[in-house]
Image 1: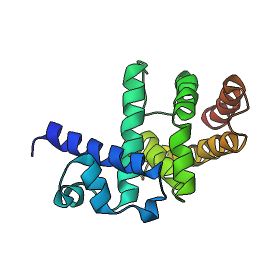
Image 2: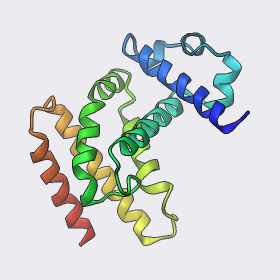
Image 3: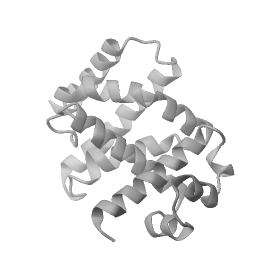
Length: 172
């Protein structure tokens, strides 16, 4: 299968799963429902994903990649002071997805996608930076979780400043 077609199939499947998650918890969604909504066979699902969590993480990673492309982020695969506002805007934009993940007890899929995008695809585990960045990713995810617990009532600029302080503390 051509890479572009494979990506399209994965996108369709992961999008279908997220759409279904708005209606019911992930534990109640069957692979047949996902593939029917995506318009593909069950075999296509199993060719691309081992489970629903993997599909959700993939979807979140793709959403970040698209966000970064649409907003001309200079280094979307790195935690940096330069992309704090864009990161906060992205988190705010996916707040409905986060809520659906919470209801499905899959909130940690956000952390997994951040780890893959911001740390694991760029750093060798034997590098000292790997551990620092992994620590920072967990911290930033905690900050995002705290913001969500306020129902995003704290101004984005305030959250961005908290994030900048956190980043400076571990990068200077």
